[in-house]
Image (tube, rainbow, N blue to C red):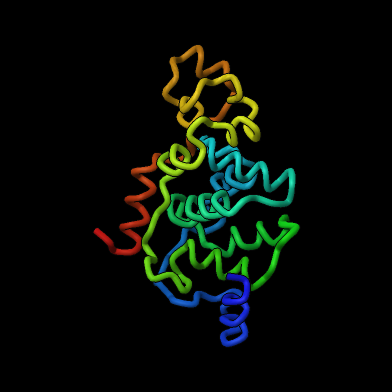
Length: 190
């Protein structure tokens, strides 16, 4: 993908900051979404798999590909924040940051790049259960949840009141179905 993205950027240098394929998105403004963006950057969205990936990025300056896809999809499609916000943040922190690969991967996940399925939304719960079924990755990066058994770690908001309160872990910043509806409405997919 690095070679492909370099070729794309060589042919279309403006794709470093402009959509390769404009979807006429009217992203939430950084001002209006500032609390969501801050929570995403700090790994406190209330979605453990997203928070684990973002905390790994903060700590190591790196994150595996599945984490990058999930964090990107969550920011652009669930929170409906411009991909450039995420691209800047990743370039600031990634030790393997590469302009062509970073920018065009962000556009791919936002659906404004070379992707032929621009409206794909990665559900963090489905993805967590598929790629981290026992919660090992989440427990490593989200220590507040380390004592939760098995797949409970992916949905801590379902725990009983006192047990939930003892975790000191944030509530989800968005309802996934509401985020999906906002994205579909914005792209006129209803």
